[in-house]
Image (cartoon, each protein chain N blue to C red):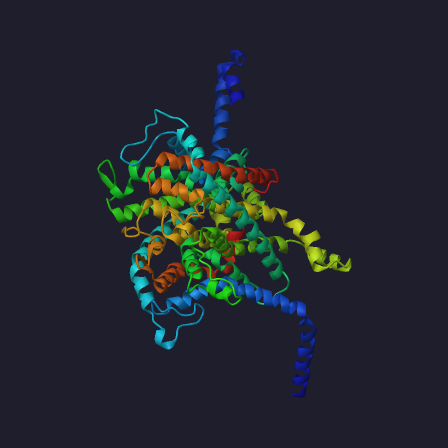
Length: 321
Length: 305
């Protein structure tokens, strides 16, 4: 661009005619470039996705700076301030839901990863009916949160639930999993682990299968035990699989709303399970505090960025995107 | 006769050393996890076949006198509208997502132009966005700025007739297309990166245009990935709930999708009708379960990418 401007603005020593053809030639080359020629393929999806995603984020941020409430009158964009953010930071509900979000994020992500890795190692050991077993382990991932929430609501039923019946065999319980604020977050996390550990297993299995067999053989020759082989040789090589699975799980943990809504049937989940994502949707669609909800959504987005941005940067540097 | 017996015995003998305690332990753990993953589904299934109010042990199948398909019939009646709505929304949005994801990935992967990485990053970041960050503007857009449910008339020509039900479903379909593009883009991109560039380069040298390379070479090669993306994306959209809740709002709405109806089924002031809920959960999950069982490998591939 700068080059073409120089030629146009430069002294007309070489004659106006030459610059004119020069410019035409550049324009012709530009229209024939791969950038322009491939644009019909990616421009429409980019515009549609870009407006929905990035336009939506910017618009949401603008709304969070207004005092928009209810749908009766449009938001007043002439008076913008950070009042909603100040209100959110002072709100004890934001603090407690933030804490629950953090607990859920850490416990759900780490346990799902560990269990998924364990399942992948089990299935990587030359098992019969491996395909069928893998299908069963991954089956919960094919189900909607609304469906799995129905199943787990019944599992946790105080009188007739399978969970209390099972632990009753060991002389424990029964516990009121849903009604007790001390237990309900753990119960939700457990159900989510049930749904997502199969996903972790698939990611780790793909990683394990890319590790050549002779590494096991070499370790065997060296007299290393199976556990030692995995711990010292195999698991360190699964770093990139672990990172990408962890990012996906953490994003799920941050935005988890559907499971809680479907399980408890209201915008307000029982005490102990209210997370930022449910607080945001409740403020918006139950109480019509649009600006306040938008501010909480921006906070949630910032937390997501903290997880995703380093990951994408790392992937970009590693040329893995 | 005797020969076959000896060979059989040989077979057993060869098998024996394999059956070590370690191996038995391994299978025991694997089967225990099979039970763990199936138990919520199994207990849901047996419950759905029992008469409501029959408080029995949660893992035993119904006794002959207790067996009834009544809950399944009731669930189907209540979900029928949701089936129609969910198919009407999920099929077009899945197909559009596959088309847009594939063309975008082609233009940004196999056509190699400088400085395309920032554009690629824009697409990829869209996958990791928490939907909460766009919910308020999204509903503002469809309610106040561009309400398709009130019809779309441009210069006196009715493009979309005013119809609460189908208009709302059209809004939902467009929403799903827009937010489904990033993941479809990434799935196709990771696949296109494995296509040998020699083939594309050779076609280019032969003077084939970018469009021709796509329709003649890339699209036919994409068949397996198109299958993966169709299966994965249909499942995602069918199972989606938050957009349905925010754009439709109530399970009694004419446009209510199947997940929205399911979330409110079988619950009233007197408590939860679990057999009805379980039957409804199975019915709502049926299309995705069928697809999953038939194409488990493709589904796993979509998920692992």
